[in-house]
Amino acid sequence: MDNKPKNFGLIGVAGFVAVRHLKAIKETGNNLIASLDPFDSVGILDSYFPHSDFFVEFERFDRHFDKLKRQGTKIDYVSICSPNYLHDAHIRFALRHKADAICEKPIVLNPWNVDDLQEIENETGRRIFTILQLRLHPKIIELRKRIQEGPADKIYDIDLTYITSRGNWYYISWKGNIQKSGGVSTNIGIHFFDLLSWIFGDTRQVIVHVSRPDKAAGFLELEKARIRWFLSLDYNDLPAPVKEAKHRTFRSIVVDGEEVEFSEGFTDLHTLSYKEILAGNGFGLNDARPSINTAYIIRNSTPVGLTGNYHPMLKSQ
Image 1 (tube, rainbow, N blue to C red):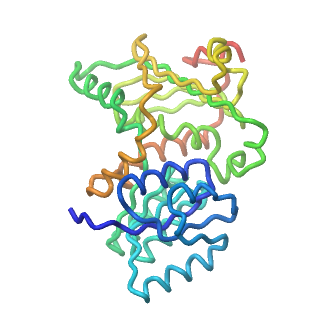
Image 2: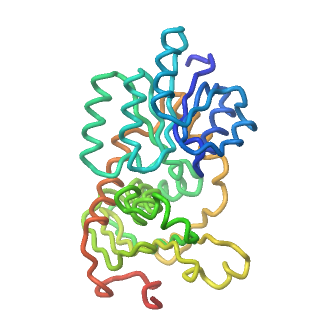
Image 3: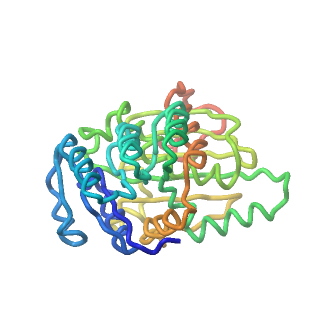
């Protein structure tokens, strides 16, 4: 492995998740050469790369990349933290500039976008990586190992609950626009659909019970699991003990009645993801494909209401 520091560009540096990428670039000993965001509230750069160039206009950012290339400065990676619907275009930008792309999830919104990017990846010889950090969480790795070593014909019953309360701003921002974010099931659910398919196999059946701007719920049948899932942005859905503790997020995965505790250990998973990518072991398009397919089907399914095997949280809705 080449130990020389790599040069990075970053798109979407003012966004919520960008600080994890800044931290990962810094902690892996690499350089941020330039970043882009239409919003200029990016003082966070001072804590990581105060001397890097910053742009609010894509055209000037693009021109800067051309200038760097003519001056002999190679950009090795472009990290992409922009809104979901722009990921596809920004990945193409990276590959056109002969850089590898590191893109937040969902890497794209539609399955055919994955196919198109696969072609461009093959044409350019560059790589497209995505951040599937939950696959690197020790508790998730431990669960997967236990399932793999368990009975080959066993089907597991799972309840997935993820409530991350958001204020009114969420629905005004691009995140509240299903055409731009993919809605609740894609924007906040993609992490969990990925890890569940990674552990329990391909999706065989999708049923959606509820689909609203602030919550979604349904049933997934995978090769080795039957999953009732519930995703919500509504503070009122939080369990009373969580509210009493002044927390705004609750996540739970119950496998055959046993809670899988993985609330801790998230802090450094982006840095670990970058270390794996830099070592040539990162997650790529084929890794992202199953959860993109599942989220797409959920997004385009007609809710059936409270019938069949639905999540217990729906009883109080």
